[in-house]
Length: 232
Image (tube, rainbow, N blue to C red):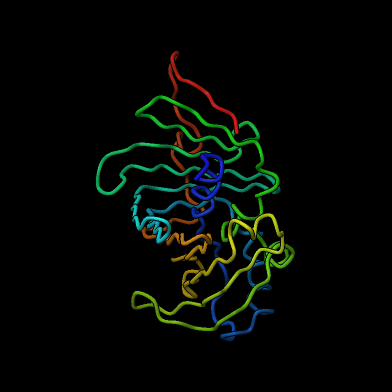
């Protein structure tokens, strides 16, 4: 997979939580979107521990599991996201992905001291913001949404939403996203990304913190005098 597409897909799976009001009717998409409109006005920051499971069935079966922490901040139209990957398949492999740092997406691979920049944030903004501060109106403008109703997940009641991108260019790389939203906390606790071509990614989140202070390095990383930079 080209590094640029891999970086976009890696960023996209860091979706998560918007605080919403509970007790809307299962399967009532209009009510869900209205709750998200109200939640977007209250959303400021979020952080969580994550597990990303990447499965490839074609051409060669392969599975990769990444763990770490994610951070989000939204202020009006401003949006920041930081993905701090600590381990891959149980082995320490520190990487930091920052969204909208200097107007671009950056991936810092600490072990090889390299930064890769992707300058197409505006095109994928609605994709990255899915579930983190985006209003119901914003989602409905960019996604075809199906509300599958209530479903039990990890012992808790959630609302299952199936999302199909309206943009053909995005849909080519991401045919569908399925999200499970915890109605008690109003956060998305699991997402499954159908990337096509025999590839799926599953993201699960725990220890979710809403509207709390974030660490100083949430959206940054420290490079050295010998760091190399690549643009995509």
